[in-house]
Image (cartoon, rainbow, N blue to C red; front, side):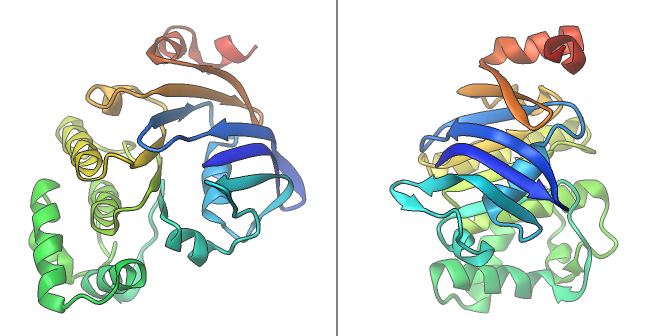
Amino acid sequence: MQINDLVVQHAQQTILDGITLELKPGTVHVLMGSNGSGKSTLAYTIMGHPAYTITGGSLFIGEEDITQLPLHKRAGKGIFLAFQQPLEIPGVRISSFLTAAYQALHGSITAAQMQEKAFFYMDLLEMDRALYYRNMHEGFSGGQRKKLELLQLLLLRPQIAILDEIDSGLDVDALATAARALKHARAENPMLTLLIITHYRHILNDIMPDQVHLMHAGKLIRTGGMELIAAVQEHGFQGLCS
């Protein structure tokens, strides 16, 4: 994916101002910044959230301009977003949701085949298989919701996965499980591109990023490697952005 000089408005206010970023196949990118810096807005814009209006710049996958492509077609192109705060959807069973999503992207699959796939990845994520028959996020803990996002990533096998604070609210054991799931996803699909939005380095202990980007006031202000994460921990966001 190529993001070219992207300008984005939300509620008639400019949130992103001139974002340029290249995400090559198979690479891992980390996006950091203080609250309100525009990280989630960038994630929503890449995914095609209709509340975010692109007023300048462009988005490309390969040679294809997807700037005006609606959300469902972007998903069909292999873009996936794991939400920072997954919403509860009463009345929508997880098994039905996952089956419908899988069929939309990869074609027909039987209920038995879907269950077999789901259970394999649920075991990897140390999820109770009984959750498969529950409604989406209904009564789920924060950690269970994040694991369900990762289950979708593993099942749907996107080409570009954006993880919006997938590590927030996870304890040490759950963080290790999440990292293991991401390593498994990359092993199954070496061309998978990851954009990980985070405030912390814990989930990166086993997933070495190719690039780390620092965002401030709707702009990308620095790009580096793990040394940039160390600088954030030492000086804080304000210390690097001032």
